[in-house]
Image (cartoon, rainbow, N blue to C red; front, side, top):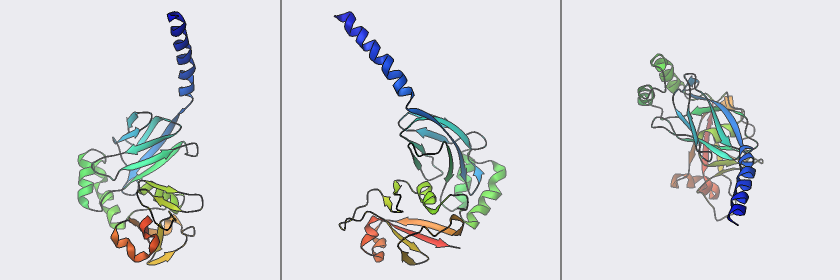
Length: 220
């Protein structure tokens, strides 16, 4: 009986190992900050696969993750980034890190070794110009890349976590240049000057749906 049990366990392991291997995939990516400066030596983690790598001197990385996973980047200099990985996720990611718009953030990034000393001037100039969103594929891509805990439905509804409404509509509100709009499909990434999300009491001035979060968008 003991030998039969051992044989059964071995057969199960033989079946599980290739099954698990089929669930992994390789994700490549580039990490940039201050518009288009490479971020080197920053840790990239696949939460479910429990794997981690650091970006190279050009901001590139390759990491093994599960087919359903979450890639995260966290540091003291930049806002945390979480990217959901599923079957629709591209094999190559372009990740833009954001930070507080102060020169102190540049000093911290250089101090931690994420930016080169020779990139200091370019980083400071980028803060003065503001973020460059022209490299994104859509306005929804901007939202997914720059705000954590956000889901975008195919119909353009943006849902922010930990927000709820008694009216049953989970979608966030969009305010473009001071006016509430029903859709932001018409916006081109290159048109956007700045975008922010408010979820506290100050959002109440935008109506009942403000409880789901309000995206404030200003264009050039």
